[in-house]
Image (cartoon, rainbow, N blue to C red; front, side):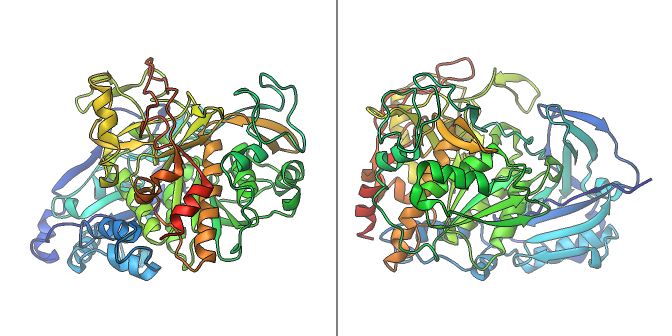
Length: 588
């Protein structure tokens, strides 16, 4: 029987352990004393169990060891991201970050002793990122089950038929459990090929108030909320149309693509010929990661949308498209992509990432780990933006299970948008006034507490909300989104034909393009890039945002939250005003 092979999920540490008690040799008799790390009470929604894999199946495992100092990474991130701090803008190098997240040497020794006890030969184990990342190659599933007190089985996604090798629970030795952030692949099932926040789409012309996709000069304003958000409207509305980038060779904008989503250069050229005549030579570089592949003859709407709108806003800024993994079988495009980018000497200053999943379906240990990797990008000087999702406060009936297996209703914000170290982008519509788009994902994280930069913004919303929705959300959680931009009726080209798309996957590339222009302004004036944005947005840049005070985001059979003056979990702090932001940043 042919050997089945499941590709790795790469993992890195972000949090620090406490002091290690004793030496590795002391624990030889304790390797079988396993403590639970994470457990699902049942198979995650939309997946079905196919049973045990063939006996000769192997798996590549990745172990994330926690760092020496639990708070060092985040403390340093806030310092370099805070105007007025002595270290503002002093972003770290690849080597400096690796040193910051490296585990204590005795923890690494302990982990190696544990693996040796299970007859895992050193030749099958590799380390990187300062020793925080252990990769075990070709581990028989039977040995992985014993190593982790797991029961690896095959699971198939009901909608896409994608198959993954996962376990519903795993554990670690008592001597190690507090020193390991997570092991993967284990209980994180990933997201299906078509992500929840994939934009709503229709063939060109199927919107109220217009019968065809707008032509070369559709005008700079919308005549109704039902018409198209064309590039000329967006560039005028957010005040970028007169800005000419001065550092396109130094400033880079990355678009992350996953699960076989590729853009088409031909479609990009058609789009530019229709909407921006001075940019018909727009192009991008493709980087393939973990078998990501690239077939421009079979593009995806998601990738086309991102590339067309980041390009039309930020042209001629250097664009990179990252193609990561060609199916959900790889299980974790986020970590594969993060591993690659963090390993590069040079990183893009701005990144647009439209994918995600309900936070409820994400194991807390995995979520904390991935969020820490995004923090590492921020401290490298990267502005990471994620869409907040298209389901308002949640999709469907929003039933979840608590730790006892009982069902209850809970609002369902989207991860990684809920990570405090990325900028979450929601959606708006209309122009006079600009109001919340009803699909705009928003709410409060269950996994992540409210970060300090939100302490002057979120409490006033909660105070005014009162007791409404008590028990349906976590009032102490990180609030999303952070900002919101136009999300409805974006014309694109797909396979040479006009289409119209809506969703926060539309507002995301517009926001990323504007942030990239701000980074261009900074770099061309001899200043560092913005890096992690949220300290700025909730601080000195607040006056550069347009507050959105009308609309709501229904979901979970409720009316959802309402947009109000100040921050709200529908539109965040509001939309971007490029000219006002330039004026503010010119002083820093």
